[in-house]
Every structure is written in structure tokens, then in C-alpha cells.
Image (cartoon, protein in one colour):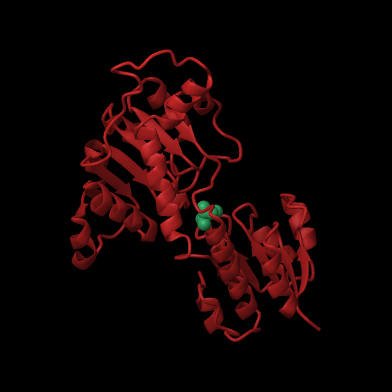
Length: 331
Ligand code: DGY
């Protein structure tokens, strides 16, 4: 008998074909976002779950799904999963790092440029039919090349954004992170480690790439925004909740910072209503990793993890990207 698994959201057909070689698969082809009760019901009897950031896996769900052995998230972030509770119950958690780094960095950089150069605002203006003449100050923004790129969270994606800024646009890179990079990683980017307050003060363009955890909740709020220059931009491609969206909307409205680019939101898919009314913010629906090739690579990696985590395939017992590998050691 094949183990049973749940694929909690729609995925590529080729991924379902691979999973069906090893498992009895219940697939959510209608792509409904199930609430906790429905997810718990669907997970009854399942040994594995293929999840995305929209499924919350917590202690209560785990208690109600005692057969569950692996939760394989198709995302690099896993703040939707209580990893501690999973570890306690011997449930392996996996994520999808690396395969999305460059694509996500491309998007973060594009969003920063769009905010700095007022692309969304000027496009809306043109489409509205309001364009009558060229003007010397029409949609003047701020330069990206040569400016100071400030990165909060210098993991893989932060470093990929720094490379684009330093090597492609001659930007001066400053960063703040839990730990400083080693000299060999800093040198090619000419990246300068700086304390948190100075990062906000010196930023021309601040890009936030911090993972979400209770410790990073509202890491950028009113106090941090007050340190920033009125000409600065802020880009968030990390997670909703890392930035206090209400405080950001107020700073944008009062032009205490110039512009923002946001791909993630507190309580998404809801967006703070004030942000929707502001011209100086570019808003995108959590698509930083959304290229066909990258989403396929993420889904394939999540499938590889699930197959190996449940003891199948060529890497049985050795999933490529475990989040809590201690669980494997205990098996
Ligand atoms: C991730 O991989 O964490 C992205 O935000 C997609 O959910």
C-alpha cells in the first residue's frame, strides 16, 4: 500500500505525476484555500503534506493528525509552520531554499527601481489620458545607480540583491543582519556591516529581506521610519508583519519617505486600505518568486523532499532541504 499524502494547493501536473509514482495523492486541484478545520479533515490518514505559505500547521492541527510525518513547504519561508511543535511530534519540515534566490532578487530589485523611478504612478497617469505635454519635473524620482543600497537581512536573497546593486549599478552596499558576513563574502560587494539605526539613517533605498518570526514582527515601524530620509525608498519582499503597514502608510502619506515597493502585506491577501489610496507605493501580490521556471523548481524540490522524507525514491530518508533535521536523526 502506498502512503497517503495531501497536496494542499494546485500544483503543476508533472509534479502530481511524480508524487503519484510513490503515493496515494489527494490533490486540491480546485485550489481552494482551506480553513484549519478543512485542512485538518483532509489530513486525516495522511503521512505527508505538500503545503504552501497559505496553510497554517500548528500544534492543534498536529495533535489532530497523528499519522503526519512530513510537511514539505513550497516556499523558502516557513513562518506558516510551528517548527517547534513539528519537531516535538517527530514531524519533518522542509522548505525550498536556493532555487528561488536569483528570481526573487530580480524582483526585489525591480520593485525598488519601480518605486524610485515612479513607474507605477506614471503608468497610471499615462493610461488615465492625463498626459498632455513633456515637463521638466514630470515624475522625477531618485537615482538608483551610485546610491546607497541598505539591506536588512543579508541571507542568500539579500546577498543576491547586493550583487545586483554593487556590480550592476555601482551602488554602495550597507547591511544589517543577525550576524556579519565573513570578509570573503563582503569584499566583492564592498558591503559594509552597519548598526541597525545607521542602516535606516543612511539608506537611499532600503530593501527588507528578513524572515518573519515573532522576533522580527514590526522590525520596521514608526521609530525606524522616522530615522529615514524623506528622499528614501523602502522595499519589502520578506513577509507581511516585518513592516508595520499602518505606520508605513502614514510615513508615505506625510512624505516622510519618498516611496515604497511592497510585495508582501500584513494579513495578505488583505492590504491595508490606506496603502491602496497612496500614489507613491507600488503594490504587487506576493509574486517575487513567480517565474514559470522558478515555481516549477520550487514545486519539484518540495516533491523531492516529500518523496525522500517518506522513505521513497533514490534519496529515501535524506530529503534535500530539511528545516528540522534533528527529526531525521531520531528516526
Ligand atoms: C517564499 O518562498 O517564501 C516566497 O515568499 C513564496 O511564498
